[in-house]
Amino acid sequence: MRITPSIFIGSSSEFIRVAKELEARLKAELGVNVTVWDDPSVFRLGQNNMDSILTAPHFFDYSILILGPDDLVTSRGKRTNAPRDNVIFELGFFLGSQGRKRAFAIVLERPAKVGKKKVARIRIPSDLAGEQFVPVALMGRNRASAAGLADVVIRIGQALENQRNLSYLTPLPSTVLAVTYYKNFLHPMCDTLLRSDIVVAGTGKTLHPEKDGFTVTVAIPKTLDKASRSGQQQYKQKYQLDLFTINNETRPFPFFISLKRSKEGLRFFDVPTTLRGCTEAIRLLLPHGAVGKSGEQELVERREIENFAETLQHVIETDPDGQHLKDLIKLKFW
Image (tube, rainbow, N blue to C red; front, side, top):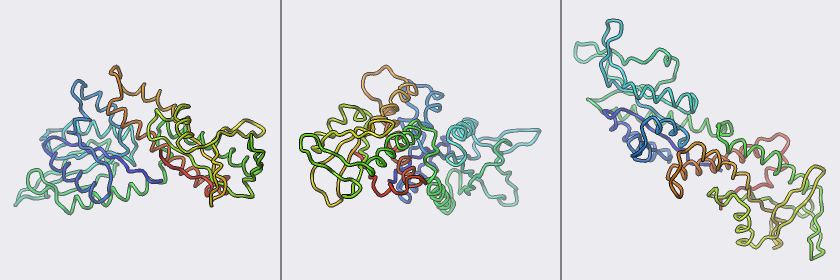
């Protein structure tokens, strides 16, 4: 299950044109969701810039900060070009929040010489000297070279592909919920089904999951409101399912079953209400007071739900003790 990554681009106002050009290229060539810092959803009216910066990493999977020769600074008697202070600050914050493999920096550099005059390279704080900056040549006052931006897109694309299989390490509440849901419910439930016969109450019919074959569909709700008992009931009624419970030596496992015939064999379903645990984490993260959901809350909910799905898919595919189950478990959004 592939999720579309979201990327934040930050820059000074002088290089907003470069940010917009990069945004267009990333959307067109990688098909990702991109938000530039001047979007009203990032720095909102009524919220100071620091609050916006502190919450921004929770809305995006990746970030790109554009460091350009914004200012002339004098350090130890030497004058050099340097990025705007707030962009350096934001880069440091995103690096600390998202990690070095999800926060990137582009360094805009002028040619080494303009005529016979040497041009000093842009000054980067020494603490960031070990970071992997992507150099891009400046063309004119505030435009980046097309070749440089094309190289940035290639590198970002490679980084996204490398990170796909590491999504389960993302420090989000939904990561923990997905892993525990699989370990404590999904895996033991499937193992119990493989060694159990099921007697359907009221019909006297006995089902043999191991012999007849079966699938377990995890119906992941598109909103956290549906990750609830009432959401489970909606799903049950919509698809005309029956509630069933099996037990092993440690606990009961309630789930839904379809009694309709299928070429895939028996069909079992579950709506993971454990996702509801993200609600409290989001409430603590975001300022609240207004009635209804804000755009920020909807964005964070979407990220948590998508991360839950991607993490769960990864755990299913890579669990060494569950290789016999990975073809039996299906994920879908509803």
